[in-house]
View 1 (cartoon, rainbow, N blue to C red):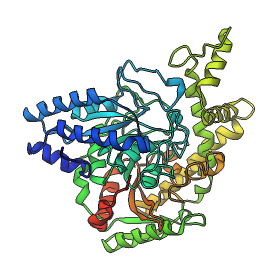
View 2: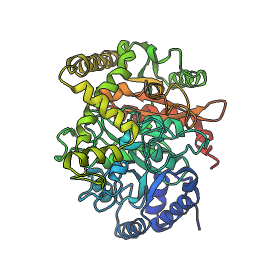
View 3: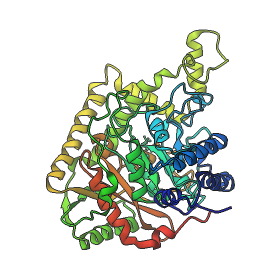
View 4: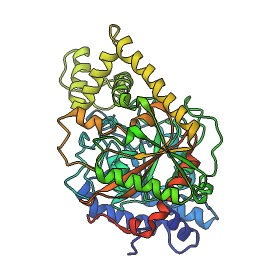
Length: 488
Ligand code: GLN
């Protein structure tokens, strides 16, 4: 059987359109890779073989009838917090172990319109709370580059699946870095779009003012193709933006001539791995050689981002997760003799330790005696962080930073130390707090062979500029970097 695992979405699409291959052949090839490699990394927690093959056959019919959508016939994986009608959606939690959604998320409807083939659901930290994928109720996912290390989180399964070539693209969600950090750890590209660019209808809520769905793929062009299919206004999500969606593929070859790229000095401080700092500095030089202008800028409130996020995100989570009470959704404890005992035991048995920690932190921050001191104050500092970006974007078009302070850490290394785990999000959180788009692209490797991510950030709805710069940078690596693959 032909093997398509190394091919990008763009190249598979060309072959499908030229009639050189069928979606069924491609889908069978990826299903075979999943069968072989998934037991080693646990990137997929559920594979829907039958429906995927059925969708592949439908895509082949659509192609025969003249369908030209770029994702038509392309197999993708979906993070297990995006609902698909009648299928299971667990959010990586026991409390939703048997939950079947009566409707599909808007992004799923859009992928279906585009003709994508949905292979199954990818692993994640429980309720997207985590940076290592170690809190999944369905077992941890491993980093295909080194099975002793974490793939990042919370969308670790979506990143690892693309890195291990189990599929050419996936959807994830990013509340504080959950697309970009695992993309960096697994050596793939991952984009958090502007807040409101992609509908959140059918995305199980973690922190609603921060959550955003976005793509993972092996390169920038493929991320642009996926975003094109899922972006746009949705009347079912009151926070979705009624702003036209540009043609993202047009920006891919625009280059960076005249683009002013800022290096925020607060992102190049102690604690950043030296190999990572060197790769990001080198990225700036490379982009300068291509005609960009590099400027140092300051985002003075960066140091508060982790503290602000870890008040606001748990506060919103404590409210969002109150709906899991054993009555409306999923798991219900058998072990109760009254209604209040049923609520208590369902939540005690159904949620894992990190989710409970967040609910308690959030409830505390929102409680009447502490609301002003924590939640309100955090919201005020959030505005200062947003203003930092506004000021910086008066001087530059884009910002360039490391995605993470370190490369993938070892399994078990931080799981018992929540503060250390939270600090890993230091460079990704600010983009969520201010709603701006950001992309992580593969920048190279540490001396021990782990991937390093380079992050670019743009003003609201600046995805085209992100794609231009990220794709210019990616092209400078040539084929060498993209040909490297994990030896799982
Ligand atoms: N690691 C962060 C957290 O644990 C971000 C998670 C996310 O973006 N979903 O909250």
